[in-house]
Length: 287
Ligand SMILES: C[S@@+](CC[C@H](N)C(=O)[O-])C[C@H]1O[C@@H](n2cnc3c(N)ncnc32)[C@H](O)[C@@H]1O
Image (cartoon, rainbow, N blue to C red):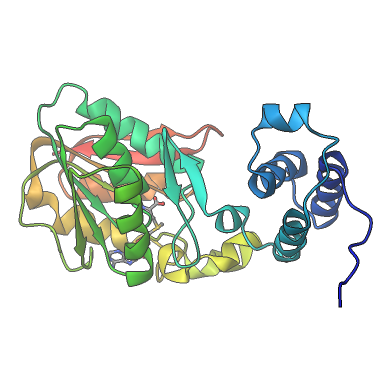
């Protein structure tokens, strides 16, 4: 028996309807997201959408939109729905089990990339690599570099593997290991970067609805949230070359404490760098 399809929707109607439903679900940037979702289900670019907005969605596209809206209305992250996300200059696959690369983290990559400008064949270590967005971006910016990425959890490691292939970043090496145990410390590096878990347990309730779908192991750090900074600053100091840089992403209230940790460990030129919202987001220092 053939089931009749209801009234068909044009791209324009689908966009308007999506935007309204996203806004009603409390999603701030409903215009940006509605465009992203329409691009995703139709496979069209923004320009193509403008020239074909009166075209009707196919039944497949309409069903896909219905499924996506059901997920998004319970605040399942847009990035997981789309499956790839732009970070810095590159694209990364993302999904359940891996932290979504944040624009704040681009500040860390920019500071690191600037430091590497005059270095030849730099040796780089990315601790707590997640999707690989930091390590792979630096490997792409500096094809003569060698980048070691350390990540503890298999769910994230699957994405690093895919992202190395997606970006053809074959000057990288992935180690399944523990940054609190010193894995990867055998080499000498020009640069050590890390965006470790840093949310204290006391702040978990402040996280937005989407973040609750991301792995807790990527976000939470026991106690005051500073454990990874203390351990990495101490354990990996011997692995930095003299004149090498250690650079961390830090939580919005943590820059002063992390600067203190680096000073206590004998690093020089300790400084904080602000993100696009004027918050101290990166702390770096020289050995
Ligand atoms: C805040 S996320 C950062 C991910 C990625 N670097 C980024 O900037 O998007 C922290 C990452 O550290 C990993 N992780 C947690 N504990 C770890 C440990 N002890 N050793 C290595 N990686 C760890 C998590 O699985 C997660 O991928």
